[in-house]
Structure formats: structure tokens, C-alpha cells
Image (tube, rainbow, N blue to C red; front, side, top):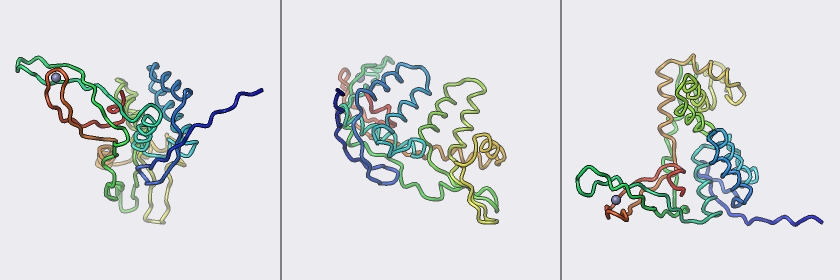
Length: 251
Ligand SMILES: [Zn+2]
């Protein structure tokens, strides 16, 4: 006799990038195990693959982490946490106030209560021209938002202090390429159809000015963000802070 399979309840959720309604289920013991294993590992590849696997599992394959912007993943992770563990999260915030003006920081860690169902994605609705770089009279480059894999490469560029760092950064920049439009014959090149080596060669052929425009595009990445006020439990200082990015919200 086979044990029955339990049906998890589902909930619906709106994808910030497209406004599309999707159905999700909370994460279960199997996904929690994935998260714990990833957290215990020093390998950043494990972290990104755990996140990708959890999003794929809990959306029943409806969301492909390779295709959607990173801020969608951040938002979905907060929704998942809220439906799987609870709506209220209490990340710790370290107080940097100097109560007696004696140069010693308070340092107390206050749990800051946030309702995860009320965290919006800010920075959406960027003007269309931000996604376009005119390379020459012949070619226009169209950009797309970074994915979770792009953010992973950017992290690797920061944590690696060697020659690999620059390579990771360049690969992250290549991830921003969506299409190349030719004004000569109207041809559209889809970057997805090209290899990393081909994309890197293309990137290396760009002018330094175009390269700077690409790097600047990383600054307009929308993210989950909320400003909150709270009082330090120890020195009673009234803090006004902005939590930004998924890790700021999780306890
Ligand atoms: Zn304090």
C-alpha cells in the first residue's frame, strides 16, 4: 500500500513585472530542507540553485527563474515566506545611535516587525528609453532587467578578489542583452540564441561609452522596498529606515 500524497493549498499572487496572476503553493518540508542546505553551504552556486528550485516547485513550473527579473523572484520569495511561515517577519536592526555623544554606538539589536504582505516593488515603470542603447546608425541594443542569475554573477564579482571577478562582472553585463536591432535590414538578433563566448565578444566590441551606459542600467533595478519607523528598545532612539532587497526583510 502506498501512502497518500497531501495536497498543499494554493494562493494567487501578482507578478510585479507583468501584472500577471499566478498560482503558488507554500513551501513544504522538502523546500525548507533545500533552503537550510543552501544556507549551510559557503557555495553561492548552491544558494542560487536552491532559490531557483523553490520558485519552480512552488509555482508548479509556471515561473522560469531564468526568464523573469530578479525583483519578481524577491517579491515571490516574500509572498512564499508569508504563506509558508507567517506574514510577520522580525529582522534584527543594529542601532548606530550614540546616546551620550561619547562616540560609543548603542549597538542594540531591535527586532523590527514587518508585514510581508505589504512590501511593494519600487522603481517599476522605468521610461522605455532606459532600455535602449543606440550603438551606431546601424544598430540598437535592447536591454532587459537582471535575473537572479545575473545578480548571482554580480555577487561573485564582489566576493572574488582575483581576475575571475572581472569575468563575472562582464558575464553579468551580457545577461542584460535582450535583442540587437539592425536598421540596415530590419533583422532582430535574440541574444538567448547565442553562447556566452559570442556575447562576451560582442560586449568587448562596444565603445567604452556604451559600456558605461550598460553599467548604469544596473542602478535602475527595481526591488522590494519599504520605509519604516521603530524605536530602539535600549536607547529609545526613533529610527527611520528603509529596508531594501529580500534579505533585509527576512529574520
Ligand atoms: Zn539604540
